[in-house]
Image (cartoon, rainbow, N blue to C red; front, side):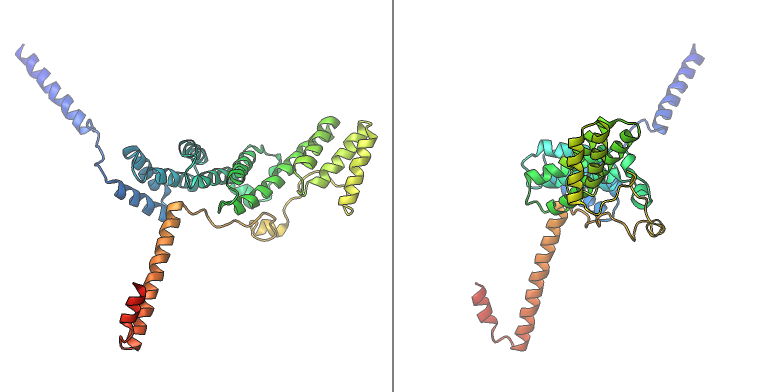
Length: 324
């Protein structure tokens, strides 16, 4: 019996040693003040270390859900997800912020980043710089982006992000219209005249002022002719001739990029709107404004000091009285 007890004791100590050796006790992160966590997150953002920034912001929100930096951290988290190429997380974070803070002064920023996330998701690296026909792809992300930007403009027409949202919406309109023409051409090749005419009419009625409108009118004219609806076909032709007198019938597909565009990765000869400046988080804007005020104050003090030296301090008392 005694050898058995000794063996059991040795086995027990071995088991306990193994638990401690292989990390039986999980290390718990020490408590960090809210201000320190937020400063560390901002430093990571400024260094473009978005993975670390996300970790710090998530920790900040978990430990201080009702702290003074909680709402700001949620905004910064959307921005960090966006730049870390995590579109689903960015959209979810934006939706959560809008749901929790519908009347927040910077809720327009959440709508803008949500639209921008879907906008970039619609265009991959290869589609952006190589001659790939995006009209054949599912426009789901483009529709999501368009909807988010539309909500932003409808609810916050005076937002500082509204001008850029309008430019991107025009690009998205062209993208969606081109997709509709591609689908209409598909139906035309398979003699689906009704479906083709409906696609063309949708472009004319809902996506006006896009380059795809003349193609839509031409498709409508041809489809209605095949259906024996000659009045509608004639109306489509008249509108086409009146508004686009130089239009020439051509295959309904997007023209491939030129050799110059391909050789320069789209930097020369591209038709897409220029990329605007990156969105600046509200906290960063606030810090920038504070720095500008401090710089202006320092410049004023320096000018006053120079004037004091030039006048040997004669007018210092007058300036102080005027300031008071």
